[in-house]
Amino acid sequence: MPGETVAERRRKVLVGELPPHFLRLAVPVLPQHAEPEVVQPRLVSFVPPNTRGRLSVTILEANLVKNYGLVRMDPYCRVRVGNVAFDTNVAANAGRSPTWNRTLNAYLPTNVESIYIQIFDEKAFGPDEVIAWAHIMLPLPIFNGDNIDEYFQLSGQQGEGKEGMIHLHFSFAPIELPLEQGGAPQAAQQPAPVPLPVEITEEDTKEIQEMFPSVDKEVIKCILEERRGDKEAAVSAILEMTSAAETA
Picture 1 (cartoon, rainbow, N blue to C red):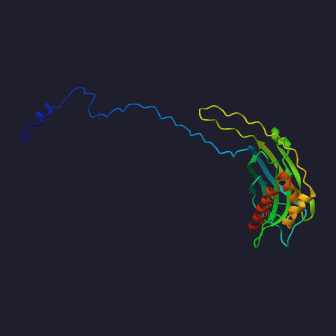
Picture 2: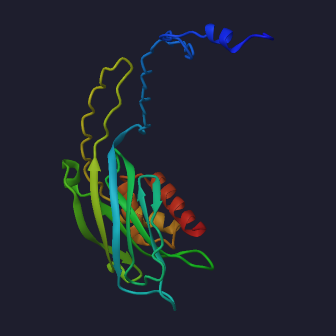
């Protein structure tokens, strides 16, 4: 106000204690809410029907008797469990002493009692060459919770069981069944009985060998044993095996 003296302005000054709200902003207080509960989704993995459990096979190394070719071989291993095949890494320039240390996990069907192993030499030009193979019956102690670490004989051009040795580690874990809707556990499956071995005759092997002259006789016999004498299933397995070897 014009003409107002300093003394008049001082008389308007508030003296004494300041009110509690002086120079303070009114901040609204939000209601407290509990932290939302984080619900972890239940992961349900698919287990194929007629599954006996989960098989773990570690392919450690192999000792071969011969290096095929002019240069050191580049071996890799193919493991077949039922109708599923797994390949290890390539042991480049390993020659007769490849080391892989590769662990493969697969669901084991109830009717499969063995695995089939092939060792290939990877080729830069042309198809990879099969240099050794083995048909290995699954060790029975693994189904009782034991781990088995053994060497197994390899077959090949040198003859049955004369191509060298392969070092494998086996373990087996039963499948834990998921809960049904409502939380009630499913009835536990009884372990499937181990079927008795099937006798394969010379005539059975010869009939299929006429269809696949390039496949070794012992390999055909092993596949027939694995398929429990089912010739159609054995032919399908050999077709799949030979086509995979040609395209590898």
